[in-house]
Length: 362
Image (cartoon, rainbow, N blue to C red; front, side):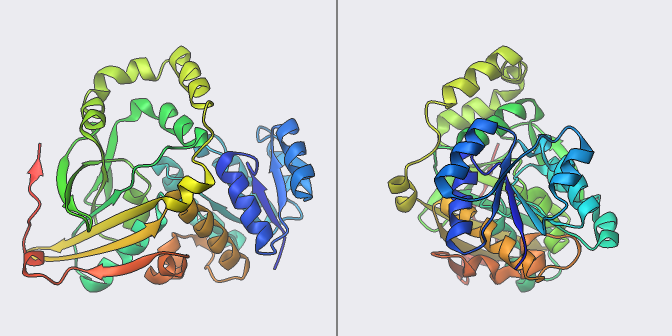
Protein backbone atom coordinates (compact mmCIF):
# COMPACT_ATOMS: atom_id res chain seq x y z
CA UNK A 1 0.00 0.00 0.00
CA UNK A 2 2.99 2.29 0.40
CA UNK A 3 5.26 3.57 3.13
CA UNK A 4 3.60 5.53 5.93
CA UNK A 5 5.55 7.80 8.28
CA UNK A 6 3.83 8.95 11.49
CA UNK A 7 5.41 12.13 12.80
CA UNK A 8 4.85 12.72 16.51
CA UNK A 9 4.16 9.00 16.95
CA UNK A 10 5.08 8.95 20.65
CA UNK A 11 2.66 11.62 21.93
CA UNK A 12 -0.50 10.42 23.66
CA UNK A 13 -2.70 10.51 20.55
CA UNK A 14 0.16 9.70 18.19
CA UNK A 15 0.93 6.52 20.15
CA UNK A 16 -2.70 5.40 19.96
CA UNK A 17 -2.68 6.04 16.22
CA UNK A 18 0.63 4.22 15.75
CA UNK A 19 -0.69 1.09 17.48
CA UNK A 20 -3.87 1.17 15.41
CA UNK A 21 -1.88 1.57 12.19
CA UNK A 22 0.25 -1.43 13.14
CA UNK A 23 -2.85 -3.47 13.97
CA UNK A 24 -4.19 -2.70 10.49
CA UNK A 25 -0.97 -3.87 8.86
CA UNK A 26 0.34 -0.49 7.73
CA UNK A 27 3.85 -1.12 9.14
CA UNK A 28 4.53 2.59 9.81
CA UNK A 29 7.84 4.35 10.25
CA UNK A 30 7.73 6.06 13.67
CA UNK A 31 9.17 9.56 13.68
CA UNK A 32 9.66 12.72 15.72
CA UNK A 33 12.30 14.96 17.21
CA UNK A 34 12.66 13.52 20.72
CA UNK A 35 15.37 10.88 20.46
CA UNK A 36 14.75 9.18 23.82
CA UNK A 37 10.97 8.91 23.49
CA UNK A 38 11.26 7.72 19.90
CA UNK A 39 13.84 5.07 20.77
CA UNK A 40 11.66 3.79 23.60
CA UNK A 41 8.65 3.52 21.28
CA UNK A 42 10.64 1.87 18.50
CA UNK A 43 11.87 -0.79 20.94
CA UNK A 44 8.38 -1.29 22.38
CA UNK A 45 6.52 -1.58 19.06
CA UNK A 46 9.40 -3.15 17.09
CA UNK A 47 8.92 -0.73 14.22
CA UNK A 48 11.48 1.31 12.27
CA UNK A 49 12.13 4.81 13.59
CA UNK A 50 13.40 8.05 12.10
CA UNK A 51 14.43 11.04 14.21
CA UNK A 52 14.58 14.44 12.52
CA UNK A 53 13.87 18.07 13.32
CA UNK A 54 11.79 20.34 11.12
CA UNK A 55 13.99 23.44 11.04
CA UNK A 56 16.03 22.51 7.95
CA UNK A 57 13.94 21.91 4.78
CA UNK A 58 16.71 19.80 3.25
CA UNK A 59 16.72 17.47 6.27
CA UNK A 60 12.94 17.10 6.12
CA UNK A 61 12.95 16.42 2.37
CA UNK A 62 15.66 13.78 2.82
CA UNK A 63 13.72 12.12 5.65
CA UNK A 64 10.63 11.88 3.44
CA UNK A 65 12.38 10.85 0.22
CA UNK A 66 11.21 7.21 0.44
CA UNK A 67 7.84 7.91 2.07
CA UNK A 68 4.47 7.62 0.32
CA UNK A 69 2.38 9.35 3.00
CA UNK A 70 3.00 11.40 6.15
CA UNK A 71 0.49 11.32 9.00
CA UNK A 72 1.31 14.30 11.21
CA UNK A 73 0.30 13.85 14.87
CA UNK A 74 2.67 16.47 16.32
CA UNK A 75 0.84 19.50 17.67
CA UNK A 76 0.60 22.39 17.90
CA UNK A 77 0.35 21.96 14.15
CA UNK A 78 1.15 25.63 13.62
CA UNK A 79 4.70 24.54 14.54
CA UNK A 80 4.91 21.39 12.41
CA UNK A 81 2.53 21.38 9.44
CA UNK A 82 4.30 23.88 7.18
CA UNK A 83 7.66 22.09 7.26
CA UNK A 84 6.14 18.66 6.72
CA UNK A 85 3.89 19.87 3.90
CA UNK A 86 6.91 21.49 2.24
CA UNK A 87 8.76 18.19 2.51
CA UNK A 88 5.79 16.28 1.11
CA UNK A 89 5.51 18.57 -1.90
CA UNK A 90 9.25 18.14 -2.49
CA UNK A 91 9.17 14.33 -2.17
CA UNK A 92 5.69 13.90 -3.71
CA UNK A 93 4.34 12.23 -0.57
CA UNK A 94 0.71 12.53 0.51
CA UNK A 95 -0.01 14.50 3.68
CA UNK A 96 -2.63 13.85 6.40
CA UNK A 97 -2.85 15.40 9.87
CA UNK A 98 -5.16 15.58 12.89
CA UNK A 99 -5.15 19.33 13.46
CA UNK A 100 -8.16 21.31 14.61
CA UNK A 101 -6.39 24.65 14.10
CA UNK A 102 -8.12 27.00 11.66
CA UNK A 103 -4.94 28.81 10.49
CA UNK A 104 -3.32 25.47 9.63
CA UNK A 105 -6.29 24.32 7.57
CA UNK A 106 -6.42 27.69 5.81
CA UNK A 107 -2.69 27.54 5.06
CA UNK A 108 -3.05 24.11 3.47
CA UNK A 109 -5.99 25.27 1.36
CA UNK A 110 -3.79 28.11 0.11
CA UNK A 111 -1.40 25.46 -1.28
CA UNK A 112 -4.06 23.64 -3.28
CA UNK A 113 -2.59 24.57 -6.67
CA UNK A 114 0.93 23.57 -5.61
CA UNK A 115 -0.32 20.22 -4.36
CA UNK A 116 -2.23 19.55 -7.59
CA UNK A 117 0.88 20.37 -9.63
CA UNK A 118 2.94 18.02 -7.44
CA UNK A 119 0.33 15.25 -7.60
CA UNK A 120 -0.03 15.31 -3.80
CA UNK A 121 -3.09 15.12 -1.54
CA UNK A 122 -3.18 17.52 1.43
CA UNK A 123 -5.84 16.32 3.88
CA UNK A 124 -5.73 18.06 7.25
CA UNK A 125 -8.01 17.58 10.27
CA UNK A 126 -8.65 13.83 9.97
CA UNK A 127 -9.77 13.70 13.60
CA UNK A 128 -12.75 14.09 15.88
CA UNK A 129 -12.15 17.84 15.94
CA UNK A 130 -13.56 18.07 12.40
CA UNK A 131 -14.50 14.76 10.74
CA UNK A 132 -17.94 14.09 12.32
CA UNK A 133 -19.15 17.67 11.93
CA UNK A 134 -17.61 17.97 8.46
CA UNK A 135 -19.59 14.90 7.40
CA UNK A 136 -22.70 16.21 9.17
CA UNK A 137 -22.29 19.49 7.27
CA UNK A 138 -22.06 17.61 3.96
CA UNK A 139 -25.20 15.66 4.82
CA UNK A 140 -27.11 18.86 5.63
CA UNK A 141 -25.90 20.47 2.40
CA UNK A 142 -27.23 17.48 0.48
CA UNK A 143 -30.62 17.98 2.16
CA UNK A 144 -30.66 21.75 1.60
CA UNK A 145 -28.41 22.51 -1.38
CA UNK A 146 -29.08 26.26 -1.37
CA UNK A 147 -28.30 26.71 2.36
CA UNK A 148 -26.68 30.01 3.31
CA UNK A 149 -26.21 29.44 7.04
CA UNK A 150 -24.69 26.49 8.86
CA UNK A 151 -24.46 25.88 12.60
CA UNK A 152 -22.76 22.80 14.04
CA UNK A 153 -22.28 21.72 17.63
CA UNK A 154 -20.81 19.03 19.86
CA UNK A 155 -21.69 17.83 23.34
CA UNK A 156 -18.81 15.87 24.84
CA UNK A 157 -17.01 16.48 28.13
CA UNK A 158 -13.58 14.98 27.93
CA UNK A 159 -10.21 15.49 29.66
CA UNK A 160 -7.87 16.72 26.91
CA UNK A 161 -4.41 15.32 26.26
CA UNK A 162 -1.26 17.34 26.90
CA UNK A 163 -0.90 18.04 23.18
CA UNK A 164 -4.42 19.39 22.97
CA UNK A 165 -3.91 21.59 26.03
CA UNK A 166 -0.68 22.98 24.62
CA UNK A 167 -2.50 23.90 21.43
CA UNK A 168 -5.21 25.68 23.44
CA UNK A 169 -2.65 27.47 25.61
CA UNK A 170 -0.62 28.62 22.59
CA UNK A 171 -3.75 30.08 20.99
CA UNK A 172 -5.11 31.62 24.19
CA UNK A 173 -4.87 35.15 22.89
CA UNK A 174 -6.71 34.48 19.62
CA UNK A 175 -10.33 34.70 20.84
CA UNK A 176 -13.02 33.17 18.61
CA UNK A 177 -13.66 32.77 14.89
CA UNK A 178 -16.76 32.36 12.74
CA UNK A 179 -17.31 32.63 8.98
CA UNK A 180 -19.43 35.33 7.39
CA UNK A 181 -19.95 35.67 3.67
CA UNK A 182 -17.24 33.07 3.10
CA UNK A 183 -14.66 35.10 5.04
CA UNK A 184 -13.21 34.32 8.45
CA UNK A 185 -14.31 36.83 11.09
CA UNK A 186 -12.74 37.26 14.51
CA UNK A 187 -15.17 37.45 17.42
CA UNK A 188 -14.66 37.46 21.19
CA UNK A 189 -14.31 34.14 22.99
CA UNK A 190 -17.72 32.61 23.82
CA UNK A 191 -19.23 35.29 21.54
CA UNK A 192 -22.64 33.65 21.40
CA UNK A 193 -24.52 31.14 23.57
CA UNK A 194 -27.29 28.97 22.21
CA UNK A 195 -29.50 26.27 23.73
CA UNK A 196 -29.24 23.19 21.52
CA UNK A 197 -30.90 19.78 21.66
CA UNK A 198 -28.11 17.34 20.87
CA UNK A 199 -30.46 14.41 21.33
CA UNK A 200 -30.70 14.35 25.11
CA UNK A 201 -32.43 17.65 25.89
CA UNK A 202 -31.50 21.32 25.43
CA UNK A 203 -28.08 22.28 26.72
CA UNK A 204 -26.22 25.62 26.57
CA UNK A 205 -23.39 25.72 24.06
CA UNK A 206 -21.02 28.53 23.11
CA UNK A 207 -19.28 29.44 19.88
CA UNK A 208 -15.84 27.89 19.59
CA UNK A 209 -13.09 28.43 16.97
CA UNK A 210 -12.70 24.80 15.91
CA UNK A 211 -11.43 23.54 12.59
CA UNK A 212 -14.94 23.05 11.22
CA UNK A 213 -15.18 26.81 10.67
CA UNK A 214 -12.81 26.05 7.80
CA UNK A 215 -13.48 22.44 6.83
CA UNK A 216 -17.28 22.69 6.77
CA UNK A 217 -17.04 25.76 4.52
CA UNK A 218 -14.68 24.09 2.06
CA UNK A 219 -16.77 20.92 2.04
CA UNK A 220 -20.15 22.59 1.49
CA UNK A 221 -19.52 26.11 0.19
CA UNK A 222 -22.07 27.42 2.74
CA UNK A 223 -20.83 30.97 3.39
CA UNK A 224 -21.91 31.50 7.02
CA UNK A 225 -20.63 29.02 9.59
CA UNK A 226 -20.73 28.93 13.39
CA UNK A 227 -19.46 26.09 15.60
CA UNK A 228 -20.76 25.45 19.12
CA UNK A 229 -19.60 23.30 22.02
CA UNK A 230 -21.38 22.49 25.28
CA UNK A 231 -19.70 24.20 28.23
CA UNK A 232 -20.64 24.20 31.93
CA UNK A 233 -21.48 27.62 33.39
CA UNK A 234 -18.05 28.19 35.04
CA UNK A 235 -16.30 27.49 31.75
CA UNK A 236 -18.64 29.81 29.84
CA UNK A 237 -17.96 32.57 32.35
CA UNK A 238 -14.22 32.01 32.09
CA UNK A 239 -14.37 32.20 28.30
CA UNK A 240 -16.27 35.49 28.44
CA UNK A 241 -13.51 36.86 30.65
CA UNK A 242 -11.03 35.66 28.08
CA UNK A 243 -10.24 39.09 26.66
CA UNK A 244 -9.06 40.27 30.08
CA UNK A 245 -7.22 37.06 30.90
CA UNK A 246 -5.65 36.31 27.52
CA UNK A 247 -2.55 38.49 28.01
CA UNK A 248 -1.88 36.67 31.27
CA UNK A 249 -2.61 33.18 29.94
CA UNK A 250 -0.44 33.83 26.89
CA UNK A 251 2.60 34.92 28.89
CA UNK A 252 5.58 32.57 28.79
CA UNK A 253 5.81 31.89 32.56
CA UNK A 254 2.14 30.95 32.79
CA UNK A 255 2.29 28.80 29.68
CA UNK A 256 5.34 27.05 31.13
CA UNK A 257 3.50 26.36 34.39
CA UNK A 258 0.28 25.18 32.72
CA UNK A 259 2.12 22.85 30.38
CA UNK A 260 3.91 21.21 33.27
CA UNK A 261 0.75 20.94 35.31
CA UNK A 262 -1.00 19.23 32.40
CA UNK A 263 1.82 16.71 32.32
CA UNK A 264 0.32 15.19 35.46
CA UNK A 265 -2.17 13.41 33.21
CA UNK A 266 -1.27 12.39 29.67
CA UNK A 267 -4.84 11.64 28.71
CA UNK A 268 -7.90 9.55 29.60
CA UNK A 269 -7.47 5.88 30.44
CA UNK A 270 -8.49 3.12 28.06
CA UNK A 271 -11.50 2.37 30.27
CA UNK A 272 -12.57 6.03 30.20
CA UNK A 273 -12.21 6.14 26.42
CA UNK A 274 -14.30 3.01 26.01
CA UNK A 275 -17.08 4.53 28.13
CA UNK A 276 -17.01 7.95 26.47
CA UNK A 277 -19.34 9.24 23.77
CA UNK A 278 -20.19 12.41 21.87
CA UNK A 279 -23.40 13.91 20.54
CA UNK A 280 -23.29 16.12 17.45
CA UNK A 281 -25.90 18.43 16.00
CA UNK A 282 -26.17 20.43 12.82
CA UNK A 283 -28.56 22.95 11.32
CA UNK A 284 -28.64 24.41 7.81
CA UNK A 285 -30.84 27.34 6.80
CA UNK A 286 -31.95 29.00 3.60
CA UNK A 287 -34.44 31.77 4.19
CA UNK A 288 -37.34 30.23 6.09
CA UNK A 289 -36.22 26.67 5.33
CA UNK A 290 -34.37 24.79 8.07
CA UNK A 291 -33.03 21.23 8.27
CA UNK A 292 -31.52 19.57 11.34
CA UNK A 293 -29.56 16.34 11.77
CA UNK A 294 -27.65 14.63 14.57
CA UNK A 295 -24.88 12.09 15.02
CA UNK A 296 -23.70 10.00 17.93
CA UNK A 297 -20.12 8.75 18.10
CA UNK A 298 -17.81 6.93 20.50
CA UNK A 299 -15.31 8.83 22.63
CA UNK A 300 -13.49 11.64 20.77
CA UNK A 301 -10.12 9.92 21.16
CA UNK A 302 -11.48 6.69 19.69
CA UNK A 303 -12.95 8.62 16.76
CA UNK A 304 -9.69 10.50 16.18
CA UNK A 305 -7.65 7.30 16.02
CA UNK A 306 -10.14 5.56 13.73
CA UNK A 307 -10.64 8.58 11.47
CA UNK A 308 -6.92 9.33 11.13
CA UNK A 309 -5.93 5.78 10.23
CA UNK A 310 -8.95 5.17 7.98
CA UNK A 311 -8.40 8.43 6.10
CA UNK A 312 -4.71 7.62 5.71
CA UNK A 313 -5.51 4.17 4.34
CA UNK A 314 -7.84 5.70 1.78
CA UNK A 315 -5.32 8.36 0.79
CA UNK A 316 -2.66 5.66 0.35
CA UNK A 317 -5.13 3.68 -1.76
CA UNK A 318 -5.58 6.67 -4.06
CA UNK A 319 -9.17 7.37 -3.05
CA UNK A 320 -8.56 11.11 -2.54
CA UNK A 321 -7.96 13.57 -5.37
CA UNK A 322 -4.77 15.61 -5.55
CA UNK A 323 -4.74 19.01 -3.88
CA UNK A 324 -6.34 20.26 -0.68
CA UNK A 325 -9.14 18.03 0.59
CA UNK A 326 -11.43 17.74 3.57
CA UNK A 327 -12.51 14.34 4.86
CA UNK A 328 -16.12 14.72 3.72
CA UNK A 329 -15.03 16.39 0.49
CA UNK A 330 -12.71 13.50 -0.35
CA UNK A 331 -14.77 10.56 0.91
CA UNK A 332 -18.36 11.84 1.16
CA UNK A 333 -20.76 12.52 4.01
CA UNK A 334 -21.02 8.80 4.80
CA UNK A 335 -17.33 8.60 5.75
CA UNK A 336 -18.14 9.14 9.43
CA UNK A 337 -20.62 6.25 9.37
CA UNK A 338 -17.80 3.93 8.26
CA UNK A 339 -16.07 4.56 11.59
CA UNK A 340 -16.71 2.00 14.31
CA UNK A 341 -19.59 2.92 16.61
CA UNK A 342 -20.77 6.06 14.77
CA UNK A 343 -24.56 6.26 14.47
CA UNK A 344 -26.71 8.54 12.34
CA UNK A 345 -27.72 10.55 10.51
CA UNK A 346 -30.75 11.27 12.68
CA UNK A 347 -32.74 13.79 10.66
CA UNK A 348 -35.20 16.02 12.50
CA UNK A 349 -38.53 15.75 10.72
CA UNK A 350 -40.67 17.18 13.51
CA UNK A 351 -42.79 20.32 12.85
CA UNK A 352 -40.43 22.30 15.06
CA UNK A 353 -37.66 21.76 12.51
CA UNK A 354 -39.26 24.33 10.20
CA UNK A 355 -38.66 27.25 12.54
CA UNK A 356 -36.08 28.32 15.13
CA UNK A 357 -36.71 26.73 18.51
CA UNK A 358 -33.43 27.40 20.21
CA UNK A 359 -33.28 31.14 20.99
CA UNK A 360 -29.92 32.81 21.15
CA UNK A 361 -28.79 33.95 24.57
CA UNK A 362 -26.38 36.85 24.68
